[in-house]
Image 1 (cartoon, one colour):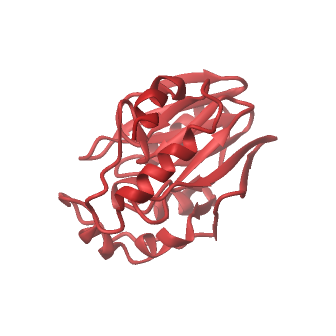
Image 2 (cartoon, rainbow, N blue to C red; image 1 turned 90 degrees about the horizontal axis):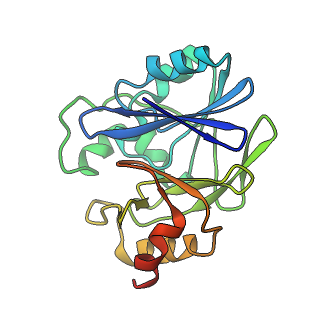
Amino acid sequence: MAGNFCAELIVETFVIGPLATNSYLVINEESAMAIDPGFGSCDLLIAAADKFGATIEVIVNTHGHWDHTYENHVLMQKTGASLLIHPLDASLIEFPEQSLLSTARTPIDVQHPSTPTRTVDTGDKVELEGVLFQVLHTPGHTAGGICLISDEAGVLISGDTLFLGTYGRVDLPGGNIDDMIRSLKSLSNLNPALNVYPGHGLPTRLADELSWVGSL
């Protein structure tokens, strides 16, 4: 677990599961947002929220692959939080057997379905105690991948779209290299000072990634 302070926000990172997925807890005052609650994350996320005196009010999936969504249902049960995902990836969490075709290897049973409370797309907002996160649809890794952006807090949660020095796989079902390039170039229109929290690997700054993104 690692904690980072971004403006008034606290971003806690948990590297979990067999694919070393980053699950995040974003905390602002007494409210918290869980992002990509993968395998083994539920109790860690709840304990972190309790430590900061916060309540998990919303869960966001950056996309529908099982390693980012495995504990959606149990986290919803334990917290009463709503669940948000892009409509093009909603079927991946409602019928998680599709994830068996959406990853190179599935070392655990992925049969843990969840139902989104609502779907979100570009232009929608997720509010966390007055701090707004803009939703940006960024297909390429999956058809329904999204990023969350808060200029106020200086945070870009990039899922499996943008990593340190590279981007997410496009060779899985639903992946598309042309979509990925368009999505990455759309990120170049954002504030380069944003701190990037990816779905796997170490955090980075958008400014540090723009040179190679611009060469695509």
